[in-house]
Amino acid sequence: MVSKKRSTGEVSATRATVGKATMGALAACATVLFASSAEAQVIQRFALRFELGAGTVLSEHTRAVRGYDSAHVQLAPRLAFNPIDWFSVQLSINAGFFLSNQANVPLGQTLMMQGGLRFEPMIGRVGRLFADGNFGFTMTGDDRRFGLDAALGFEFQAARWLGIGPVARFHFVKQDPQNSFPQDAMYWSAGLATTFRVPAPEAVPVVVDARPVDTDSDGVFDPDDQCVTEPMGSRPDPARRGCPIRDTDRDGVFDNEDQCVNEAQGEHPDPARRGCPDGDADSDTVLNAQDQCRDVPQGDRPDPARAGCPLRDRDNDTVPDDTDHCPDQPGAPHSDPNRNGCPGLVRVQNGMIQILAPVYFATNRDTILRRSFPVLDAVVDAIRASSEIRRVSVEGHTDDVGNDARNMSLSQRRAWSVVEYIHGHGIAANRLRAQGFGETRPLRPIEGLRGRALRDARAQNRRVEFRIVTE
Image 1: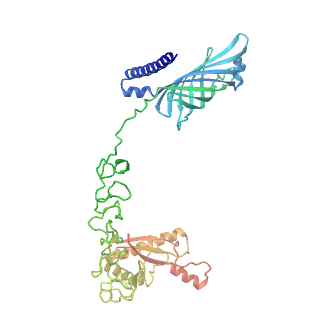
Image 2: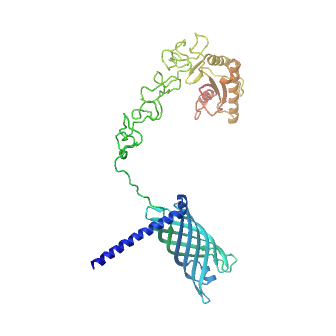
Image 3: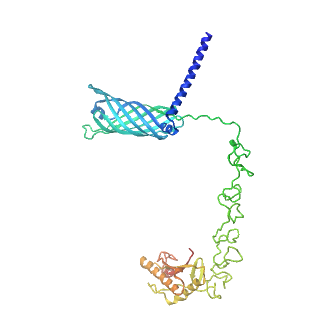
């Protein structure tokens, strides 16, 4: 008895050996059949699907015209190709078998030849959620009609080569509107879907040397080294084990000390920000480290005693103190040194050439009256004497009396008259421009005013202004 049990064990071992040999032979055959990995990858993209379901009719057409009963069975084989893992195109043959309520036709049949698309994303390792749509021609007896179907289902990953799970499908067949019963055929089914695939080969485990490796020979073994091929050197990065401290902008200042990691400090480093280039906040070509007036450009007249600063101008009339004959009283530039910067008919202040006497015109005309020539000559002197006044906008304004459009035109023409006068006295045309605003920008509001107060407000609103243009 003992010898028989041993013989039985030997037989089992032999069978296992034979099984392993058989699997090896099949694998060898597959290798021969798909000689190249490219061919194998193409084959793995194909899938063969089968679907079996049962359902009921949803429209009266099938019962009324064909005499089919409600219950039916659907059987569909499909050949699919996956260009990408979650999407496939497929060809289908969908056969339907309907119980018949006619004595001479025990079983009704439909046959659909279809093409379609299927979306089938993998849900973890559980399986694939899928939705598909197919369309083509449906043959019922001698009839040929356009038909389509759509389905939703889930296939569990039963094996690497097999998916299986539930599916529900809706069927639609378009009918001839000339039919005596012109209703489209619709029915549904639910059942079981299966998919067979050629599985990708399993990864072959590779035996590696278990001993630790230090590829860059910096004393930090590869499993712990965040820069495997780059030695950490004499300045290791405390935040990245096995890595050197980087100098991203290659300016000689390492990133852990560089306040401008992505911008090289260049030839003029900022003494207050390590690794950063020095800036020029006021864009006057004097770098911030040397600029004693960082927010004020030095302009055309830099102060030799203060780098990056303009010459001092205590009264802010654009005339520097060293040439201003009246440095504490706002005035205007003048070619006469004894009048330069002193009060007169005009003064430069707050970006304006402010006139201390109005410009008078003939009533409702753009003709300048002679009594306004002195103040305009003072404007000409100020523009001519100052290089800082590069351009002037002459702006005309009217009061609210009269038509709005007429007032706008009058203010524009008056502004042009003043520009022509200034240009005629030696100021280049490209330093002047004229603009009329009509009654749109009153200097004083007139609402609620009466009598003399109203007349005074309107007189102030009728004016010409000289704005210094900086752009």
